[in-house]
Length: 403
Image 1 (cartoon, rainbow, N blue to C red):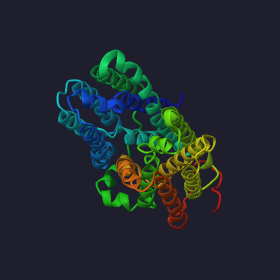
Image 2: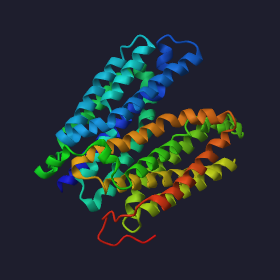
Image 3: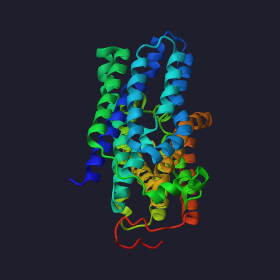
Image 4: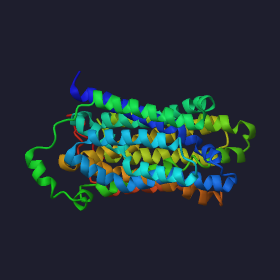
């Protein structure tokens, strides 16, 4: 087995197990806040929102800095540090007595988190250049599928072990993830002496000046902004258009279609990039997702909604992997992890503010959320086509198709 392939197995395992562990408890955080003595629904929602938002907000600020450390000292030790700290934080969460304790621990988790972005950087660094898109797509697939399994397992375990007990189980799963990384992953050779000499001159400003880099950060931000806008409002939208008592089942089916098709999109991107330019893949996928959102906005039939959600997931997953791969193609070895830290920050910021914006738009209409997403993706496709500089990603030795 080639060393890079063994590393890929390690990163896929860590991403899947780690993200599943996170979602063992987070979907039930509101119930835990209530168990801590908060009784008013508005207060439960407030404390839950603060706890859920603290980690991604702080992680977004810290990711480029942790990436910078990874470029100097290696990514593996940083991910090990992150996973071990998650074990400790999850155990501590099982002992909290007040909701502010929970928020403080989640904030601390944000400081030491960021292993999701680091695993993407590690996948890109470990794989041969012609396999980079495939490697990134597989890790993104694992990151997407883990949260699909975690809530199901958590829903089974919570009544058996109690909500506090579920935190201990989550900590144990993070420990397993740590062991998988420690045993399976072998750190690739670091940059050459010449690269190390140049490393001191690669500043955050230099990173932002890489070709297409700021544009691709904006692309990733926008894709995540749209992708995360459905969660808060889809069940309410389904209830409004007449699904009533079946809303939980139908919402679950639609979310599953979105998640599974998104995972397939991560793999589809690697195939498309062998023959098409990243610019064309991103722009076409964004337009296709906009079409799916338009269908969701105007349709009330489940037979139309389900394929449209699947199309949205497939398209967004494809565009996201293509954007990360295009960015990876212009990043020099001495700034690899720091650059992926910036990309991860863009993704996290989009994920963090999306539910807030959706909530504000719902005051006008549920359909406005979907229509706005379609307009944003249409504008994104146009911007990519007009602004993005095309470069051959060297995914294969065949030439990139002309636009």
